[in-house]
Image (cartoon, rainbow, N blue to C red; front, top):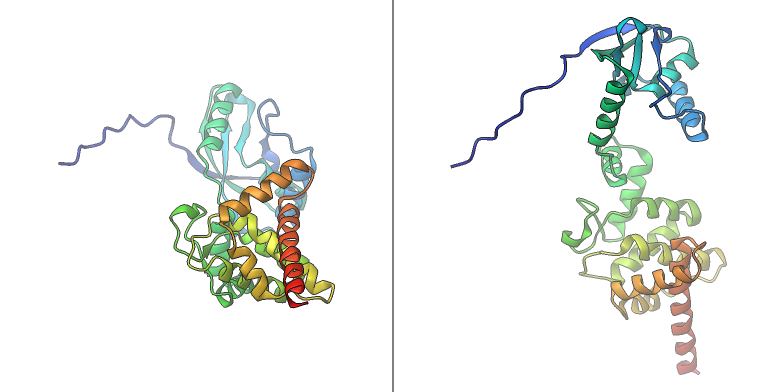
Length: 277
């Protein structure tokens, strides 16, 4: 028999949905995050430029006695509305708090309860919405014989499932679709039948090796690179890459991976030339 869950009594006061002009709302700087920085200013500018009510989430506002209404959650949206000047009113839910201290406690709890979306989740949503870039990335993944992972926890994923969307996007920007597809195909063949536990680290190196060679007009041998990759376990590649990065902390992980994989490929190519000679 399933044990019945005992719920604690509901706390706080039931919020009320209201509409007010942006100018009627205040922000308490004593606990709110500062928006006087580049990241916040850029976010406010983006919201203001492409204001979309379908994406808008209501503000959480505190009625602090006779001091007025203070935004607890949503100051970037508020500032974006003020920046535009043509947003006549904003919807918000208002609750009554006795002090800034109570508001700050709710602000902290609201932010602790949020679960930020991972890049993979955002990509899946973009894919479902037929976003052109997401569709292009998915086409490359499928054409390479790979699939999209169900989560970023790759330990329990099916063989050939990947979640390193950011790395694929970076490869497309740096090397183009042709080289990115080749790199994905090499990874799929090099670790055929394996769970892609370290694809996020290793792929940047494969893409860098393939892309740099294509750019220089000296394309790599896919068969040889596949053999090189398959010559050791993913864990060994990961260890070598991270060991090299540890020696050069300023180096980006994709660049460290490219150095390790390119070096291994060039050594194998040199050995093949010696044998042929």
